[in-house]
Image (cartoon, rainbow, N blue to C red):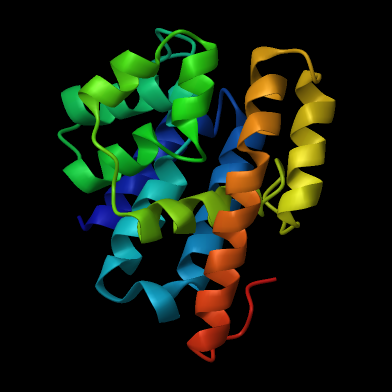
Length: 188
C-alpha cells in the first residue's frame, strides 16, 4: 500500500465514524492538496498524505493532550511509523506553534518535531485554511471568520487563529502566486 492509500485508510478509520464532519473536512483538504500537484512536483504524494491526516489528533481514540497537532503527530510517529516528513507537517500544520504557545505546549511541540520546508508548510496552510469544515472550498478570510465564530474570540483557538491570521493569509497568497506562475488553474 502506498503512502497516500495508507494515509486515507488510517484517517478514515480514526475520523469517519466518530467525527464525520472532521472526516469530510480532511477529505476536502486532501482534494485541495491534490490540486496543487503542478507546484508540488515530487512532494505531491507527501502533501496529500499529510493533508488527509492533518486532523487525526481529534480522534477520541488517540487524543491525549487535547492539542490535535501534537496528538496526531505522536500517534503517527509512535504507533504507525509514518513517514517523518508527513509527521512533521501534521505536527506543525496551520501555525500550530502559535496554538501550542496558547496551550503552554510550544516547547514540547518544537522540541519533538522539526519544521518541514517552508514551501510545504505554506501548502498545507493553504489547503487547510481554504477548506470549510464540510470539505468545500472557501477563502482564508472566510475560513478564519468561521473558526473565530465557532470557537469564540476569547478562547484558546479564537486567540490563536487571530494571531495567526497574517501568516495564514500570507501563506495562502504565496501558494496562489506560485500556482499562477506555474500557469496552473487557481484552485477554487
